[in-house]
Image 1 (cartoon, chains in turn brown, purple):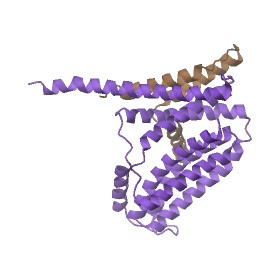
Image 2: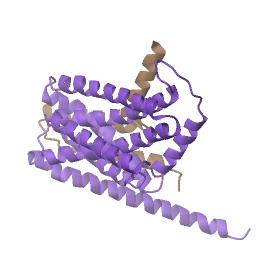
Image 3: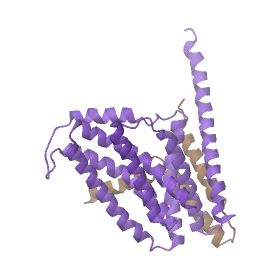
Image 4: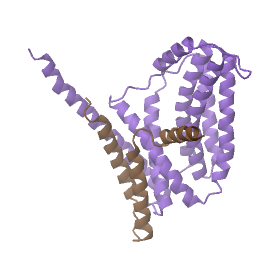
Length: 69
Length: 256
């Protein structure tokens, strides 16, 4: 049963998150920061998530291509 | 988002996945036998239909703000994955998706496998190959159709886009009887990656509580901005790769 659960979890991890978990971590952190800015500081931070996501993409690409030509 | 954008996004995403599923089904059917292959395909389609019928309406019970936050986050992460691969392919850092080569590999593997009847299926290998291929490719389609459809409160139209794409690809596949290697799959994946990431960002931020300037019209800026940055990354990576090759070549040619 636990092996089946591990395989099930591994499948969904690979399906949604894939090769680079850091992108998912950046999205989660940026969403949390956006919610905090909106609800605690009353800042309409619509710009935060697009910038974070596109920066995370660049970071991920840089890691994937480092040392390759 | 208007209905046309919803339909087209789901249609293109689904067409890409259907092309990949077709390659696997063709390899199983041509090399092994069609009856078991079609049984595997039908079983996978039944599982996918149940998933849509259960998950789709269940998600409509979740409040829209919460739904947009969760679905937006998932779509943004999922879209980043697509876009990352598409950029690496477009810039030459990853091999292009080649349906012809994949078909040849699947045919070789299918030829080498033993024939075994099991659970009323004449060729278990053909059944499982077809079932897994259609189910795995179909899951991505279901995920995209449900998230887009539920967020736009138009699951029917999203499902129609998915079904239309499957029918078109299946019809072309039957007519051609070969993997659809001429479909510009890599370009389509690039476009789908841009759409998934853009809508994920838009809905995720809305779910977190922001008000986009111009409301839905903000998408008209988010999508092109994502596309421009993605194309910029492609150009940058191509230049880096070319510079790397130029630096290596004189060293290789220099006399010992």
